Amino acid sequence: MAVLGTGGKVRLRREAPEPTVLSPGNINLGSNAIYVRNPAFWSGDEVTINSANGLPIDSGDADSEPDCPDGHAMYYGSEWRLGSNRDHITNENDDFYSATNTDQFYMREEECGLTTSATYFIYRDQLDRVSFYTTRSASLTGATGSRVPLFKVDFGSLIIAASGTEAYNNAITECAADLGDYYFSDGQDEVTLESICDFAPDYEEPAADTAEYDNADFEPRYYINAGEEAAVWRVQCDLSQWTLNLNAPEVDTTAIGERFGEAVKSVVSGGGTMDFVVERESYTGNEDPTTLMRLLLLTEKGCRTDAQFWMIDNRTAVDTLLPGDLYYDTEILITSVAINTRAGDIIAGSMNFVTVGEIALRMGTN
Image (spheres, helix red, strand yellow):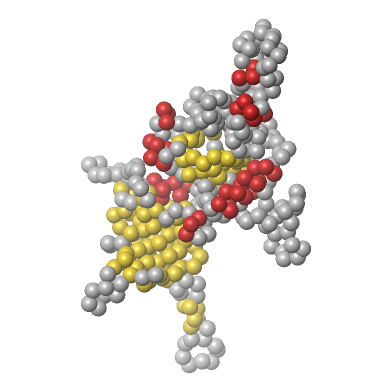
């Protein structure tokens, strides 16, 4: 059965990217950004950043210092930022100790503040450097003047994760505190959170505890797609048409000696295509076609997406026509993308997908 999308729409809900742990060496002051290799984080995404030692940002108080008291330098020439407690050191010949007894020797929370968690929108540049913004519209344009300033301080380790439900964000915050003495190797500047904070166990007995080294009762930390409140549905824009093909092949179960055939349905599966115009645009509640192009390049966490193929949207009852909606609800994987650059024509693309898991036909007013 082929379902053609004339007059319909497609709504997508991305799988959440896997939370990633970054080291202080990832910060690039020249671009006011932090290097992130994980390709599942895209421009416009809302993320939370967490570090138990404090974040390399200034929360906006009057001290103009990053809110990471233990991450400041103590001597001139360090790669870390010298704080206001060491402002008497401007070159290598200056005295290590201040001549004023009232000056603080160590940078403390009282001097710079302490912020361990914050939520921003991100912009990812062509060199995989991620910068932070306070609004989604600003993050999509990537304007350098609107970026949240970053500072070179030793925050130890920083978790960047998709912003989700309150329970999910709290679990990420707990995990940031549990990183403890986890260190990066010399050849590694980025790891996934899964290697540090595991999922809850499958067994029922004994019950998982919340004590140190036994806190296994957290909800899965990077699965935030369950429920309507946990992820954002967006309409896929600039589609010229879509096709959804569904089939349920038969399996012959005829016994030997039977005069007439017998069969049962096999696995229900599906696939299809979407044709689109290649463009980068900013929409409210919508996505441009680059979403489809980027999904193909993901091979691990984040490569799947929930999809709804709408044929009737909130129709009012007229004569024999029934009110409400009509759409297919499933999960898809992008398997191929083709881009057409024919001379004198618009740049257009076509992608193929396959369905994964249950395929449901939804209808009605609720």
